[in-house]
Length: 202
Picture 1: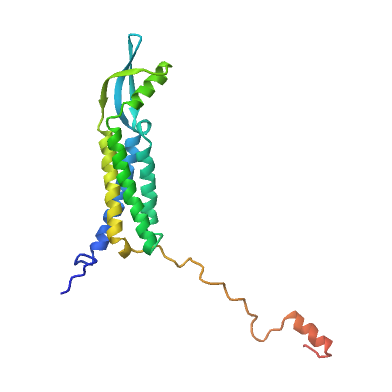
Picture 2 (picture 1 turned 90 degrees about the horizontal axis):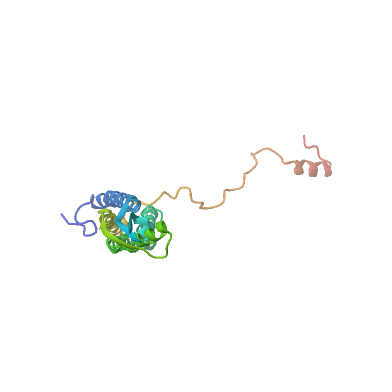
């Protein structure tokens, strides 16, 4: 039996890829968005001999992962609204969004600038030193979510051309034909013309 190279020898491969892309894309975007609202770093601001605990959430460290997650989620939906080359482009955007989210999360995993900004805002000064800095595992959760988005994009690039598209039955394919008068009925203007000719239209 001849193997189909486009489906890896299995007709169910595109279906499995579709389910995997939907699941990984949705879970990945949710993980990035949830992680953005969690605490990524903590420390103590020191000024004038006093110390004050400060923390920084993922969104204050960088808004890029959550923004890219939204782009990736929109791209995952748009994959089914376009065809041919458009589907390939959208799938590439999905993959790039995931890769960007991974990179931004990893860069923010050791960031201290957000802690220093928050400390300065709390103390009402332009600059404050932060000591005893510790980082949580949420940046890695965000990076994992970005990785899932990247996987969804790669699946869409590999199998997207074999996935179904949105139905086109609602697309306007032509104008509706003008309504015809029923056979055997006369229009009002025909009756007046008959009267002008001296005919009895009845």
